Image 1 (spheres, rainbow, N blue to C red):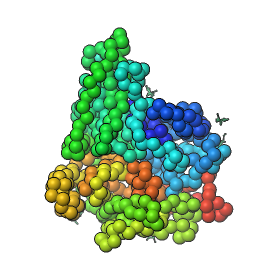
Image 2: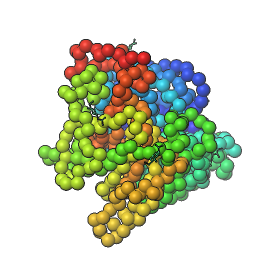
Image 3: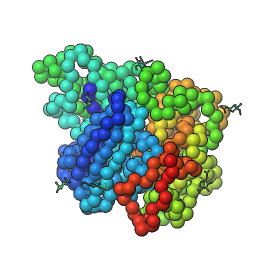
Length: 518
Ligand SMILES: *[C@@H]1O[C@H](CO)[C@@H](O)[C@H](O)[C@H]1NC(C)=O
Ligand SMILES: *[C@@H]1O[C@H](CO)[C@@H](O)[C@H](O)[C@H]1NC(C)=O
Ligand SMILES: *[C@@H]1O[C@H](CO)[C@@H](O)[C@H](O)[C@H]1NC(C)=O
Ligand SMILES: *[C@@H]1O[C@H](CO)[C@@H](O)[C@H](O)[C@H]1NC(C)=O
Ligand SMILES: *[C@@H]1O[C@H](CO)[C@@H](O)[C@H](O)[C@H]1NC(C)=O
Ligand SMILES: *[C@@H]1O[C@H](CO)[C@@H](O)[C@H](O)[C@H]1NC(C)=O
């Protein structure tokens, strides 16, 4: 078993997970400090966990309870989030600024969550103190940039004839990557927590925030081979390499001819269309009843989301349906739990339809949608811009149902004719939905001038972040929270606020509300 992480940026850290079994506890103590790292050859300040960059991997099993005591030894507040971990009933552990107060300098906070019914590879990342780390001028594989020219130590060694599982995540902040291995095909077996139909690929486009597992068999001549990660859809292509060595290679170097990257959007889209959920794989999966039959449930609500960019008081902001999210001093979830939501934010800041007039007008405020517990909804992401988007929802897996075939064609016509009629969603597009075997996942890319549609059931009570995975966009407002309240205030639906929760803002000195009932 090998672990692979693709990182585009130093401030993002990587972790791997999960197989099968009982419910034991895994305990960790993490010491967060500054340290000097040189992933691109130039020394820079980075954030270390127990002296390591990237941070430690957590190797756990389905349903394990994970307890991580995080000591913030930085001189600024710090918070970690766990992308794709579902935290059933427990947005208290999500570690985003709408649910948790950041850990103050010199203090610690103990995360406690269960990887309930989950398999796959996930990553964690700081939701604070990330801004200063931004230097998107290199591609890293496991925190390193390859020097090439056969000078690198092997990242992995394979025994001839054996098959290895590689976990590939794009934990970057901006750029889609293509990943490939010289001379070796990759059999896709898992994607963001779901087993896939096992197609074989020579290369894979991995958009920001996405994770895959592939099987690679060491069935080639015994020597070194390059793994290659290169940027997609960028003006100049950034490439890095790492070495895989055959154990019996006797120092035979890798060929200097790197496998070529695919070109263009259509290739990427076709690959996306080839991904299918494996309906016969027996494995833990969240919400098995709902997920097997997602195609036969009636939609109760359609939320259409359009991203936009504008300047507000001269400053760049990104928005969803005209609202650019700002974090409040009191986390939204705490305000809601303490019954003082009205002092901190408004529910339903945006409509389910984007405004048709004044689309460029942006207001700044906490952006909160409220959803009805257990409702089955459709969310449409329409991207009117010329760059690719990548969206992620905390607390859930969803089904991307659009097959995306028609709109790409429209996009190509759009480019050629310069028409202003780009790919837009309309209800008749539903006729083309994949209602059978869309891969249940937590991240979805949306191509330029295109759209995507997802189905999900809001069955996980909590306050959940829907955000752009592109860091600048998320940081400058392209995110919102979905409040999913169980009216019963029952422990069957949601856990109580943990006793060790850090308190801040207006709830700091308020009396604790009565706990949820059984
Ligand atoms: C964390 O690391 C710092 C710097 O090395 C050290 O001073 C501190 O004692 C460590 N704290 C813990 C809890 O290990
Ligand atoms: C994770 O743990 C399992 C069980 O202990 C072990 O077989 C496996 O090799 C470990 N994987 C990694 C990547 O450490
Ligand atoms: C901080 O760490 C100590 C152990 O050193 C632990 O007892 C305490 O519960 C932790 N605090 C929080 C808020 O998790
Ligand atoms: C589905 O997964 C199982 C392993 O769990 C595998 O044996 C089977 O070949 C997969 N099906 C397809 C169509 O890839
Ligand atoms: C879905 O809606 C259709 C038409 O309104 C109705 O006939 C059907 O019973 C509904 N199905 C479910 C499962 O509620
Ligand atoms: C949203 O929450 C507010 C405040 O609790 C409530 O008045 C409103 O009915 C909710 N709306 C929906 C659609 O659940």
